[in-house]
Image 1 (cartoon, rainbow, N blue to C red):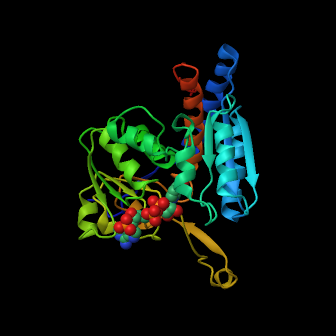
Image 2 (image 1 turned 60 degrees about the vertical axis):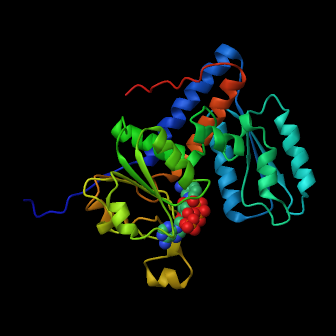
Length: 309
Ligand code: NDP
């Protein structure tokens, strides 16, 4: 037996997302040439939340780079619910716009559920509309939330067929945990959804061939939670103090996942890092959803070209 610790394959989500964006850009080029159709994404942001501003800027830049139309609507924090609903109504009716994304969180005086429900389900590129939630649950084609879609693409790239694999998803949120579980079920995995009330969570996780952590607790998943050789997908994005005590004292932070990466890498067969794993897939899948919805609106079969090696 070797006395060196086994090292998991590190899943390079950054590289996969870059390749996916390149494929989407190629497909968009074809769409423009053959069908005179340019997919358009409208992003709506209300207020000044700094993290949201960064996300929205990144989304805008990457949408442009993919050759799509990108409209960003920056609304004042005092915007009323009625004004926001009226903008969504206009975007629903705009033939140049195929995807509408309302950046969350919204200010407290606006009912986010009402706003998300007002988006045309066929333009709901976040996949949060109740119609798309229902389509996913029923196994019908719809628009799927971007982060779990990105996780599934990484898993399929790694494994090909997922049939029969034991999957455990930690987290049951509407934006990650539940749709992730539905997608894995759709791939014929045997799926367990764990959450804060799950008894003996480490034992449940040790059953998993595929372990997805979407919790929001820094480095919660330890080595003895992981079945040797399992694939671990870490969705978590947690800010913790810098390892350097001087920097930490200055308030500097670093980002870690829900999985203790070092421990996981010694046991798992493959693991996503944070940053550079699931994170970059989310915007790439937003572009994919926008492309898909533009194709569907025009009755065209979406087709992503493979890139030459
Ligand atoms: P939520 O807070 O909405 O959900 C967290 C889930 O984790 C809940 O279901 C909760 O259970 C469960 N949970 C909390 N504590 C524990 C615990 N100690 N043991 C077991 N389960 C627990 O978070 P999100 O789903 O929105 O996000 C999860 C993580 O993913 C966050 O770190 C977030 O930042 C990140 N994220 C990353 C994205 C990306 O692009 N990479 C996109 C979206 C999110 P219960 O329901 O019982 O309360």
